[in-house]
Length: 137
Image (tube, rainbow, N blue to C red):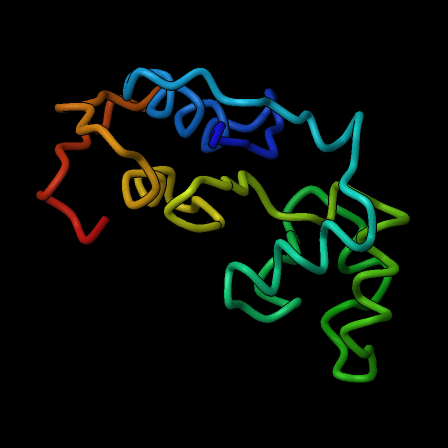
């Protein structure tokens, strides 16, 4: 099974996650979800497979979250998914799919749970060094 990453190249966390996947020896399928958003069914399946709530996948920073009033309790999960379909920037990233599961990889080292091979130590763009086994990844 090929690893898939729902990626935003403008996001440092997403870029770090992609590089960790590549360092493991995998060349993932990269879906730039702002250009090619998942279908509604795909998004619902991703959320279900991650075992998180719809709200856990909503991105606030740099999105119309506040302007749309999405912090209010009045919105159902279906309505929140409708907003994510209308404004894909509301989908938090990166989401990674592998044979080991599906995760929202924030922080980026969460991807280590999904990789078959150890990557050794990895230096993130901000200079932070990630060493597998040294964190709770």
